[in-house]
Length: 418
Ligand code: AMP
Ligand code: GLY
Image (cartoon, rainbow, N blue to C red; front, side):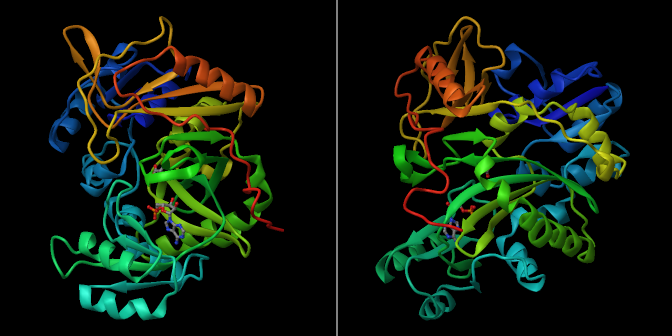
């Protein structure tokens, strides 16, 4: 089988590693990939949809696997399918579950899917009047894609006004969402969907804040663990009250969801509630989850494509993974890049590259999140120790990372959830 993975981050590197483990793989290409991915996989720059279509035809690509949300928002999956090329990734219309928070919240409300109470506001003055309906802390979100940077938690009216200054900085008429603040602990769950049927993966958990003990600004994700067995007691409820209804809702909207549905969940005292849906694997969750996948990823593509996910059997290695993101100084606001990266001699299967470039034959930093280190172990602590042993062997100027990935207790000790 010939596979083309679309994307350039650590998630796409982890996807390519997972495809490379398939005994069915013949040709594997990552587009555009990056200078780190090119050390272990073929990469190719394909700038426009037409070029991708031509490449798929010339290289007899069996499945295109879209890694991130941007190509879906840009309509790549529709363009490929329109050209008769098999693509794993939802249509642009189904991608709205992620690309428009207003669409997702309306859908959840209409189908009684548990989520935070909310109000939409289309202008600064509407947002200002809606404030009266909420208590603090209050969550404010931009409607569209914001790469994890569009969420503000305001502790008081002054902070809400400051968030409005940013959210309405380009225009006073922008759609935003005001949301009740949910208390609980966060977990991610992926559902492999063919529009009608789904199979859930193991649970995973992102560590979104920049600093240890969940302090500091939100980032795209500083680390992940899998599996999160502490969330297993909620699985049945999540499947019946969240995933089944959202798939039904998407069918009724005439945009059945086919691909990987990411459920970002808060386990609250009232049970699991949806924080967000995404239309793809998470980053860095994929780096932790995919190494534990014992089922052939090509079989997963086939099941989605033939709409036989009900017959798909997902198998997992009996192990734990811990993934630690190494980021540039200044991330997430203003990353400083261009520094040489020193790596351990053998890092196959333990490093997924993201913001990296090549300069004079050396790998240098080229983005905020530079790479993810992932280790597997018999238990979480063993995986954690191994991951940080690898981290110790990596260096670049200004390297920042969290030292507590895999140490969090779920639920947090301060919470009592029955
Ligand atoms: P989102 O992009 O909507 O997932 O939000 C990013 C992060 O903000 C989430 O992972 C949560 O940590 C936090 N967050 C978002 N919405 C809420 C909410 N309603 N209550 C509490 N925290 C939230
Ligand atoms: N880990 C968060 C995301 O992928 O959106």
